[in-house]
Amino acid sequence: MVRGRSGAGRPWVIGVLVLALAGAGLGLYWFQPWKLWQDETVDEALPGVVATSPPPAAGPAPSPTRDAGPRTLAGGELISHEHATSGTAELVRLADGSHVVRLENLDTSNGPDLHVWLTDAPVKEGKAGWGVFDDGEYVSLGELKGNKGSQNYTVPADIDPSRYTSVSIWCDRFDVSFGAAELARV
Image 1 (cartoon, rainbow, N blue to C red):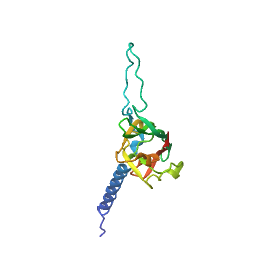
Image 2: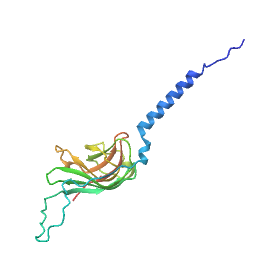
Image 3: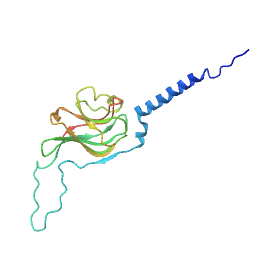
Image 4: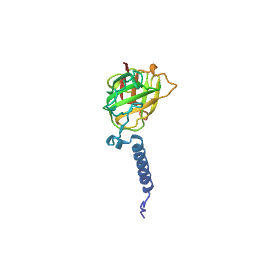
């Protein structure tokens, strides 16, 4: 008498399918590939800049003072690293003495766990510059608000911004720079 194997291999197949689905779910969560097709545009005004209407015709226009508003201390063009990135990064001192890093006309890929870092690392072209920003000192100024537009990132009051020479759009999940700018003093 010959006995058949009714269902003997089924638990193994189900186990493999469960592992494959769990692996696919984890991979999707980790890589978040849909973000490559999702743009988030954020357009913020520079803090402390107030739009004013023209003065009345009867009197002279008030003359602005040199230190009345924000002042750019350093800046540079963003270069591409892991993903195509363009725009500018500026270190700006506000009228109250606080500092912000301003990204203007930013255009980069969206991705998981992106942050704006103020760093002391030199900006290097190409693959040589992808992973240097976590080698020295850096300060995370927060999550990237959007992968397109103009945005402000507050520098904490206890940080001396003159100690830092570059800005990186850093992917914490994969330890890689999407793009960076050297902060040349103005």
